[in-house]
Image 1 (cartoon, rainbow, N blue to C red):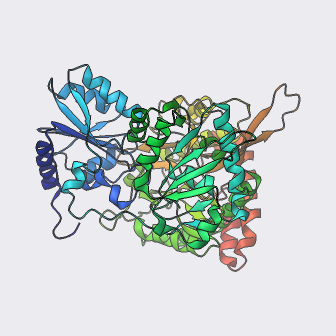
Image 2 (image 1 turned 90 degrees about the horizontal axis):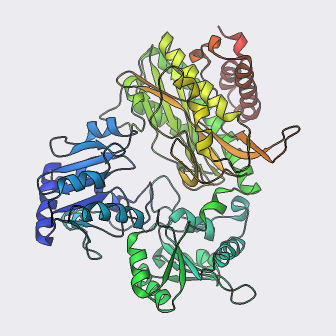
Image 3 (image 1 turned 30 degrees about the horizontal axis):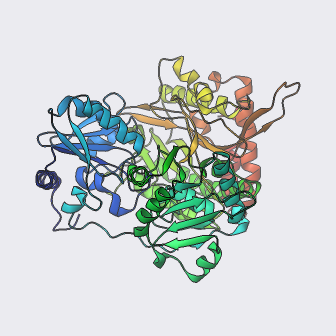
Length: 612
């Protein structure tokens, strides 16, 4: 915050003043940009500016006399630490959804504003219906009239990071081939076009990467994909992106099937689709409501459908899979160097969270093809480990104390893959409760990693495997078990996931997901064990249908000192031993320059029968 920036309470006052000027009784402030991404440019951090909450998901509702911040279970503890609870009531988004809270609070005739570029059609419909039931109205502010922007005096500029081609040795498939695949999908839907609004889909489709947001190599922009006609006109793309981001080399890479236009031209081209009476596919779960409303008003037939890039992007090709394996080997070597260093430094009480986080990043930076972190490292010592998405700062960093637990969730972006790994580390001897919970989490991790399932199975059908051991003891964790992961793209990628909530997307070969059960005791400690896995074909003798399983990609030792051996079955012990043998065999050759780390790795991956 600059010296001239208003204090948080003053920001709320300024926003309310602007709402009065606009004739609004309230306003909805989501943690979102025009692309509905998890990582947004600094300019779009409106929720953080207004409330102080820095998590990746949340929404605030500001009324004349009340204000509330809604977050999920990952962020309830974090929000309580970051937000002025005198100004904002903090509510669990599932237990008290924003639309229900609004309907209870707003007076009949109330006018609640929203920015249609920052909300999806589904979200707008949900809130609008709730307000209509109490005789209130949901009103879109005019383009460029977001009231938060009006009072945010030092709002950052629009990002202009260079856009670069993603090389074929990393992408594995030419952009022209991807475009034809997407166009064929649209033609099967009898659609003329699709509007692509998510930056990772745009990057995947055109084999480009950028740097407009932190932690993900995204070039922000929109695209209209024209399906063409089978045997007739070729598929093409209208790309709406600031031309200052495109070098001559990138323009040449895009080729003549891509027409670059200024972002300001998008409304005009949506109007043209409407004027042609085009059938246009739009993903209502991720697209801005403003796009849908513009298309419909212009006369287009808006077809509700999935982002046509999402599924093919999720199913990695052979080149991408081999790339991610190589990236995980290098990442595993960096982790081994860190874990060896940690084992020497932490027992003396000389480390804090920030020092450890910075040291791991230092080791990763030395790896080939390193492009940056894939998310802010979660480095939680003791009670901070119970904050699921804790983010260490110089002000909050905590000493890593002997006898406690240290939860380290981190990842990196490499040219050939994206990594995400969590290890819970003992600092000296852990107590029996911590060892029991750790082993229960490990049992869930193993159960999911070992799963064999028929084609057509969704992640939601597998989620119980990771929770079963915890449920037997009456405990659970309040987050999903697995999220999709991109190929040098977003560390959180759809449409696949593993969670309690229903997911209709069947798992397919080539999809990459996380396997990350956990346990969190508020005020005491947190435990999570996370590896990335790839869906693969499974060879099951005598199987009567096609079967799938998981290939574990992450290569990092699991802390043997936290394992209560008596709680593991012989099969689970065999899984840990086989995994550790593989970790040693694949990353030891990359540590030839450090015999000390190699010796540490031998000890860290010894069979569990040799514990002690």
